[in-house]
Length: 96
Image (tube, rainbow, N blue to C red; front, side):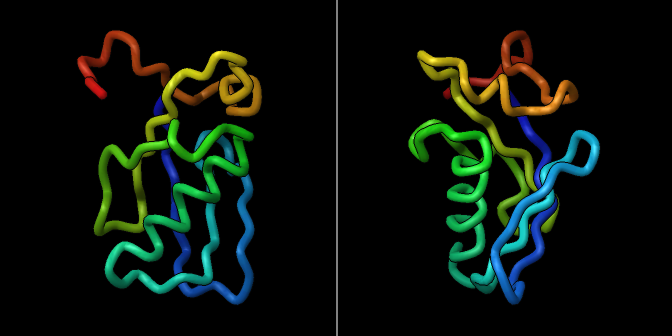
């Protein structure tokens, strides 16, 4: 499943909220040496209640708007917590 994430680095406090089909994520980490990207992946995993190892950054490593891929889990919890607009990865030609 692919999720669009809008990142707000150097926030005073970490939080996340869905705004339509986009996950807004505020992280306290600065956008230096991948610190904010790591914090974003952790926030997405926490928001969807999936293991961190199932969350991958697909695009936007140097942008505030990112596309994150959440790999399927055996429990299917990630799809249940994602909004209807989240895009499945099947048929998009994406590989792991």
